[in-house]
Length: 437
Image 1 (tube, helix red, strand yellow):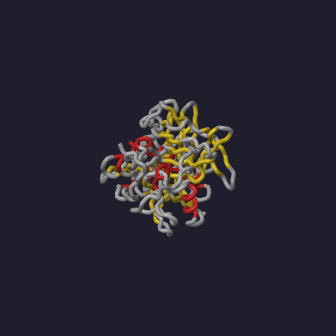
Image 2 (tube, helix red, strand yellow; image 1 turned 180 degrees about the vertical axis):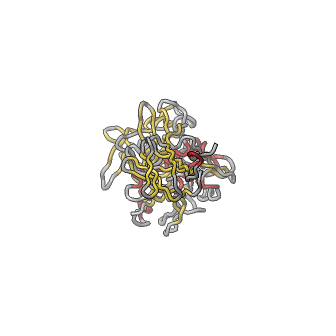
Image 3 (tube, helix red, strand yellow; image 1 turned 90 degrees about the horizontal axis):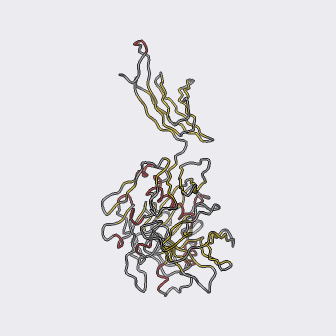
């Protein structure tokens, strides 16, 4: 049977335009003065058009709209088109389970991602999906090799014991612009861990800068000019969300690579030179060889976990009335206290959700029930400092961290009390961040 039946054997022109769009939206299909309207808001519509030419499909939901043109040229033809005012890619996970995997939700259902191993490429369905599709390596005028990350909107919430993280490509009711992009449509994150001395840089084939204080890293990054610093909690959160939604697991060491974390414990932490992942297909995965004796890269950002713990520019720990708290530093001397820190030196069981700052994902519970393959799979390493009330927080893990490293691993309250020649200081470094002003 033909796709379109012409009544009484007539020869009138007819074609079909099938549209998939946002459920709950209105959908129209027009050509000049002729406008067809979908009978419902189900998210699927079939329009029978009776003339050649350009037909414009328009979808409207709330205050957002999107259009797409369809060139109709053939009698009896079927044209399929997708028109969305926004897309949402999400994951969900019961907070009571020990498995590190998340379920895919919304437009992420059915998608998958795998990382490269040596010369064998991986695959990610997110390569063609914004914002992942626009994450690219670039070299700035300063000579620094950076990774450009575009803005996106997000939701993170807990409902009936289930946590949800959603990323949207456009503004939509209920979603907030991720705070990493408050002042710019994109940020630049160092492709490599910071190298150099008084002139710090993000460069391939360089020795990682270590045994410097957090303040030293912040000052020397800032010396590069306006908009320069080291990784902020906002930028780290954006990366964490993008990786979680793409891979749908906390266990990034298994999904992407262990990172350079298998060095035997010694008096000093000895990271390898930057750039060992430059030949990885798609710049996501790890080189061949023993998994924890090589570095790891995600979308051009090398060494996010392993090598050295990386300081955060605007997150510290502080002591208030004998309670140890995370402290988010605002402008000037303003400090906002977040949730209480967990017991140190245990695997992280859960990450906190502060309603004021839902994007921040920090250890809220670390107990002996956790492990390297359950819950977040990462470790909260730290100590109490009796002679200091404010100390640093760093993330990721070091060359001697082993399976305690990862995307959410923390070193809490360490390093600031070390002199540069002491062994502990060798576990710490930084990553450049540039936010256009």
